[in-house]
Length: 120
Image (cartoon, rainbow, N blue to C red; front, top):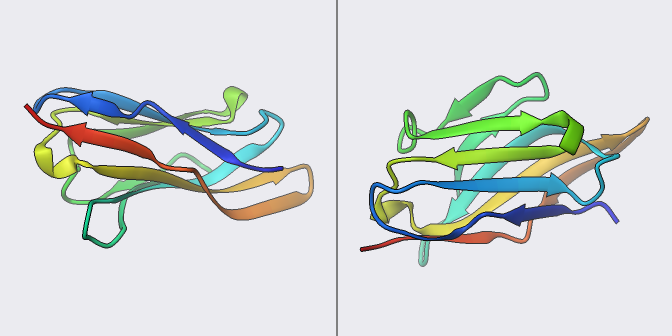
């Protein structure tokens, strides 16, 4: 089964850092376009960052300059490095991706979500 597995969430103080990971359930699957979303309690899910299959990135204004996406194709893993975290970054973070294996495509896959809490 083609799944995305997230890790790296936790509790951190304001100003701290976390790195989230989003990995394909098997490294034989290639991650193509990948997005990170977040959803805070009582709020709609919002797009935080995107990375194309070619590696170009875009960020929401609220995280620009603080969050950075990167990828390791050999591990079929994408990362979200989050620095200078603020209480308003508290949310469940989800990765969303299109994957391929050979000529087969597996689109619109979601991770299970990982909780990020920023509090003193």
